[in-house]
Length: 145
Image 1 (cartoon, rainbow, N blue to C red):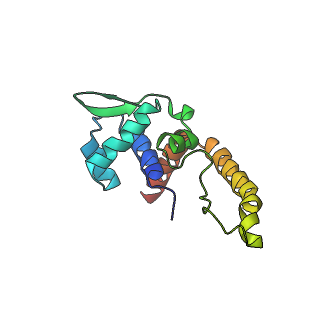
Image 2: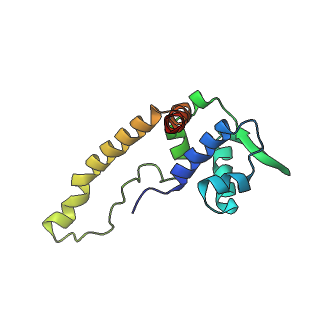
């Protein structure tokens, strides 16, 4: 099982909004870039809006960035699209057998490891901005020319 694709799609949406900022970015247009259904885009865009990352106006087609790219980290996107609940990146199996040596101790043994890994992930995501992603996209496109 992988982290929800909402995270990658959220990054895609924000990057596209910047690269295509002089045009109207409808959910249909964004969906064609992501290769998904516009309803999926509207749902994720709504999550990004609730987090203060994008602006959308009811009844008016199109979305735009609500913040400077350099002020939007991948951690912001990760949290905005509810990839996982806080401190639940790694699921812990419920009700291990308390009569078993491993069963009664496994959760206490691996919980600190899971917590450290989640903190490391969040720290890494917090150091990369959407501006970094957009720059990389544009450099990759230029190198293909």
